[in-house]
Image (cartoon, helix red, strand yellow):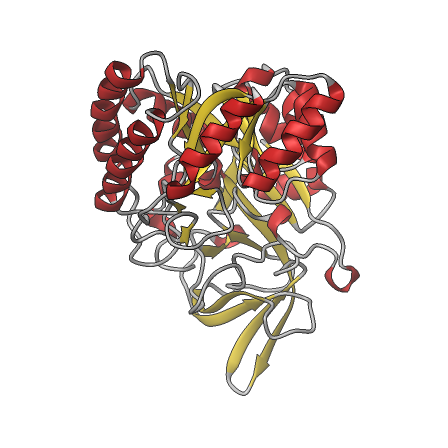
Length: 411
């Protein structure tokens, strides 16, 4: 297995049964039967609950915790999370339908994304959710659609801040971005919102994602709240909502260390106290996706062949980049690094040599792990890719080469 598997926080929740990895107390061999075979994703309720409990124990009570559906839109996962968080964030009409089907109050659902179609905006208006405006053009379309339908438009402004979240896996704000309205342009947008009589709710200020640096995250909090106070002075109404994004990362690669959550939440607590004085009843929202569900998931594939090519061993599996693009290194990595990977059916066996774990696709990009130490794996063994609960199946080219779809289980 890759050397960092045993250090993962999820291994405190997952178990071994007769040397086999188990989620929800059930060996992956049993889960494979339930899934109708391999490949499949399994998401562990116990890990979801543990992460939520950890957050609730650290966060100030005044902070509302929202789940970003984009991280994992499996309906059973969305339903499970909706019962345990304070709201949902969606990025499409399909995700909006998922969110509404959970029974979540429309007032606790927000819609973000730089390219919302008119039909999606109309559905959002009809549902009465908060639309995060990301451009002047989008504001004009919302105004036109709301007037035509005779419906109120509840809007917030997604702000592209004038700073960046350093050490971020993906930078979503600062500099020139397609996301949100540049901070220096927001005052003009706020004036137009007031002129049009749109129902102003507040701001979403999101700087980046997948960050393990407490220093960078706390510095971003400083910038977010100061920017919010500055913009609030020019708002057409009271700020009812301040979505400060998330950005909290999880460890994927060797040398990654889990985030020191207490440092981040303690710093946030100070800002929340100040915010209550400066913005009154504004609801502070922490919107998380990957940090809530990422460590709860495992992708499981079956070894269908073992071959040697010029001295290198390859374990060829029935799963690969078409189900797990991120693990293949083709979703944002500049230099490919291995996700945590193990032979799930031989977790307690000694490693006997190195092998690369590859998928069934006829492309050299189809790699799940490259030259890792493994036990004597053979066809029929199951391979587990950890840290796979977020941006897995839904972020992958599932139609590539007509390969079968992976199943998903919540256990």
